[in-house]
Amino acid sequence: MSMRGLATIFSALLTTTAVCAADFGVTDAGRVSALAPPSFYLHAGLAGVFNDPSTRISLAGIRVLGAAVKIGDRATFAVEAGYFLTPSIAVSVSGGVPPLSKVEASGTLSGFGTIGKSRGGPFSATVHYHFDGLGTFQPYVGAGVAVLIIFSDEDRLVRRYRTDDATGPVLQAGFDLMLDSHWGAFFDVKKGFVTTTTRGYLSGLPVRSSVSLDPVVLHSGLTYRY
Image (cartoon, rainbow, N blue to C red; front, side, top):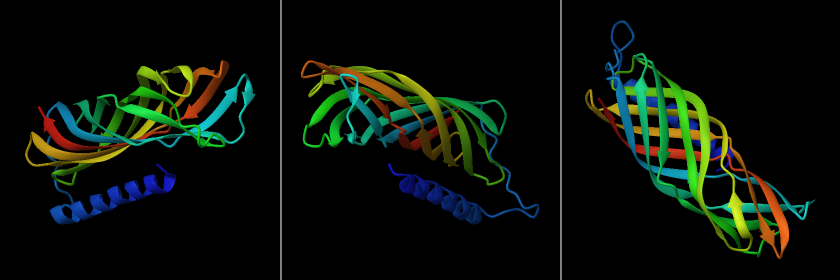
């Protein structure tokens, strides 16, 4: 996903915040008290994983100039489990069913087909601040650590294809729209900054690549607090 696309998403999120705040209105004091949240919550629903890879590939220790890869977008089911430390501060962990991603040759390697396939995905642990005073509409922002976990790899063009697990920072923003004190809907955006290493053999020669994935994960569905 391009930076322009990411900016569009965050712009839409901020616009939604303003519209919902206007719809709910304010009291004479200029605020509407937020619903007091129970301690635990779950977010469950469909997630889209959008990678924006940049790659450095070497063959037998020599860099292949202009070589790049493409990784298709994927959809999966994901869950985020969180706990409110205070009415405004919460911590959470999130992850989903690991999708199978196809890594295709691009740039100067265009036409060589699929390099390999990997089953895995980003998981994260974040701390976030929830804004009150908007009634049932409750936006939040946060940050934390993203972990790329690879469960399996499949050979294609590259033999003995392997992808390393990796970690990196992640940013988060979203909102809950509560229907009552327990149930609601949510929309969440996470932007990770994760670089992994792949390796294998091409025509008997060792091939190695450093891939900055920098995934964007869009997650939406139901909220349950208890």
